[in-house]
Length: 510
Image 1 (cartoon, rainbow, N blue to C red):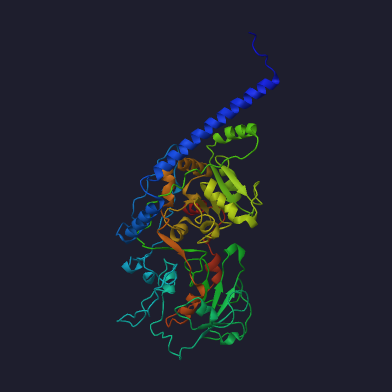
Image 2: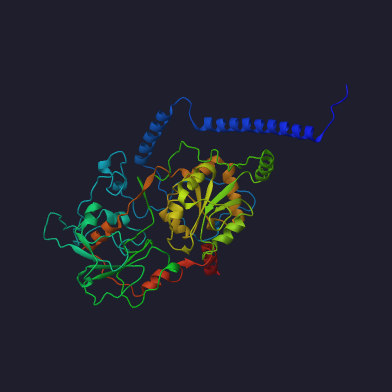
């Protein structure tokens, strides 16, 4: 019997059949692997509800248990290969926790009882009492101003502060007037804002006229001429942008500052993390944050899909996401991302990249982070002290993705962020070494998941800026200082780094 004649049509059909068989085999193996991972992470003897309940009970027990401090607890050892050397081994970049000062047992928050949860936390009902006085000096004991506690932002101290002699039922208490010459449109004239926000100290009012009669004038972004100054009046400068994007202040005596910097008089951070128990910064997680984090290539052509799969297999499917629109920032972040992309794929969405995701579909865009990506570049546009924006807090920590950060000094991130929740670029000597570590994390689910054990240990709180301003105005020991040169404080030497903090530290040491 003669063999069938080979034609171009027959060859094409054979290739299609073999390709289809291969894809079915790969799909079956992927499902087996996926179900195997799921079986390891979920106990089959428990229902989902029972497992969730057990986890919640375990969290509460852990939150109330005395354990080692975040500054002394043992870190997970990271195996090394080749020349992978984190920069912290070489640079004097001090690792700190955002737990500052001595530990007070009252700082432990019972999350199961709303009546014991501070009023500024979700569902919290515990209101502050009048501040205690020192028996020896008669001064209030609360530490509210930078000179009283320079290593802390004092946000929670201010939120829980009520002056010792403050009595809201006393009609003789004079309302403090806060004059706003421009901007801050959310602050409507009158006292309603302070009552609507439930401020513990609410005897203040906003005014847009008669600055001479005001107790405080808030200048947002720039100082304007407001006439003759009342000698008992305080002037406050309010900045939310970094020094590179704010105006220089001329011929103005500034008493208070309100910025994202932790040494401001009234700190106005983009977000503020608060632990339920300052001694518990890590708890076990039941969810595998690495599971199925493989960016799939979607195309209708089987032939091109096979080619692309072969290409991405060389990269182990590992991709890093970045949403960015400012392509020429001061800190050379674009150059860093370009160099990083030589060793790991960086998917850039927005005006600076080749991928698009409309702002009108932001929820779907960030949903990709949870579904497809293990890493996200949370790069700020400037490297300035304490400058950490929603790029990190919302885009990064707000999703099940590990943020890689650039912007503030590593010490500032350690102070402001949950413990072990990110990777700072200055921990590594180069983008190449960072990429090597990312590949290592990709291959080690346990190590990758260790960066998510902060979840459930606390929450991002509402810092109630206006409540704190009102309370501080009623402080009889309020700071009557003034900045000799607020520009030097705001944009002086060492406040911002033109490139990286690593290079700045190196120049200081040479």
